[in-house]
Image (cartoon, rainbow, N blue to C red):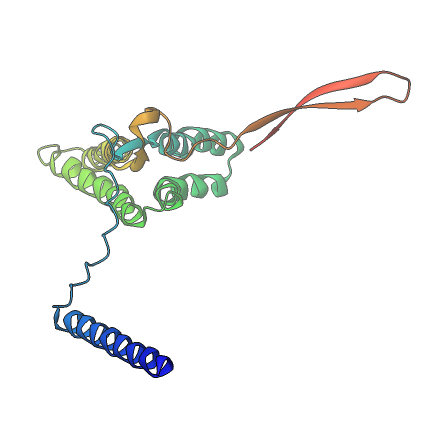
Length: 210
């Protein structure tokens, strides 16, 4: 009799527990789903402080074209006159027309190569025509040739000056934090060296890598 009562009470407790679990599960199923928040976006990179932006500057390499022109127009003609060498005279003429344009090409500026070559051909031709035309009232046999020669010389000198003054600039990036220095820092490294000597002692030195 006692055993049956205990069993009956256990059965009632199990039913109550089952009903509570079912009610709790139904309540959770009826709750609206909480939307999942999207992942936080990565913070944007902070901009560089004002005044530290990269800027573009230009560097002048006209001294290279001037050296080439000076060699072609002064040194080689003098040497050719002294040695009576027509080959040096041809090299001087070719150097005037081609050496500075190829200097521009060596700097990666092939558009300026064409501009420099056109300037060196066009200005002497125009100068010669104007010089000859200016001698129209002259009655001498040498008036027109002399006027043309003067015009050609002025055109040559003008082409040399304009090439060096206007065309011989290339862009170069600089970092304002290192104003006056190229953006790419120098990779020169210095290191001391020491080596033993056969007769005793040591030799000290200083080495550099570029």
